[in-house]
Image (tube, rainbow, N blue to C red):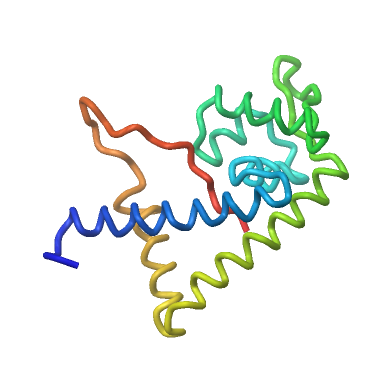
Length: 160
């Protein structure tokens, strides 16, 4: 690629993220799930979390969470049950059918990510993942104030 700098890093991250997300979306569609739905189900497994708590953990807005939960409930993968501690809140409970689909989805996820990382030399794999993790948890963990920030796409958080 051309010159080095922030723009190139941003584009490399954007292109790799988009390509990975597209591949995961296509592969998960084969079993009737989206990356976001997989993420919600994986996060909800045995966690006793409310919709709001799950949305916070996986960085999606409340409206997107409601739409995702509506789809998961319609498909029989999850249920909203009253919280034992807050009668206004709903805890997300993964059904047996949901557990089966998330197990398949996790297998797809591991296969795709394993293939992607496997395409790198062994000595580069952990460095890439460790470096990105440090950036996300450190220097890039808090977005700076911006008058017109770029639209934050719904994160298809990789819980795996």
